[in-house]
Length: 249
Ligand SMILES: [Mn+2]
Image (cartoon, rainbow, N blue to C red; front, side, top):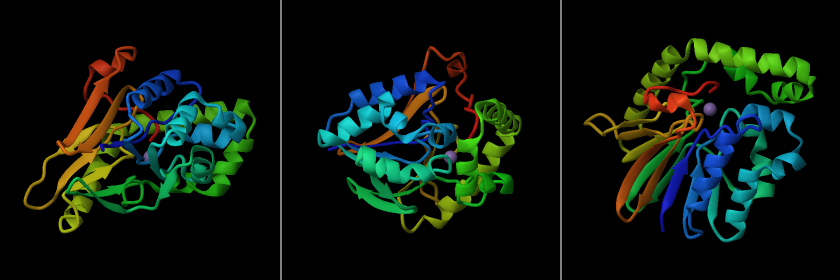
């Protein structure tokens, strides 16, 4: 049995390439596999603005529900974008909802998992966006207001992205030090850069799964050990640049 981990797919209707890659990735899994999604499977836009019945028809979410129905295991950790979708994931996809921090042992590897937004690096204005009130209000805005607001938030994210990524990674490394006794491997999401830092005498190996905006990335743990893969998407020009990151964390 193999365990697969992915995060920050940020599915949304206006980015069909994410949906396509995620469905292909699911097609490659066998139902004896177990999947863990470490948050932000759906983008805030999808969760807040798509009616639930439309969401249930979304191709890769249907594929995930089908994988589960055929006997595959699916567990999901809430992210800052899709926290409020967890009841939907549980009901419509049959997913098990995990509450972070999650500690599990896979093939003898002690793994600590968190999405990453609660470790202390996020800005206050972003924390405010995670409230149910903001989520509901965003869902009720007319499209002529929500669209420009969404683009303005994306631009704001992209402007300070490098600094923001670095700030998060510093916080992640400090957090990793606190996990040294409990885990051999720390797996985190939220930051969209794909990162794999080896263990040293202060902290365990740290893998940041990375976002699916411009490429696919996932971790596999089976009886062969731990392997981490980043797969470029030739259809997205930015994929040629390994340091390129995705917008809107
Ligand atoms: Mn996130």
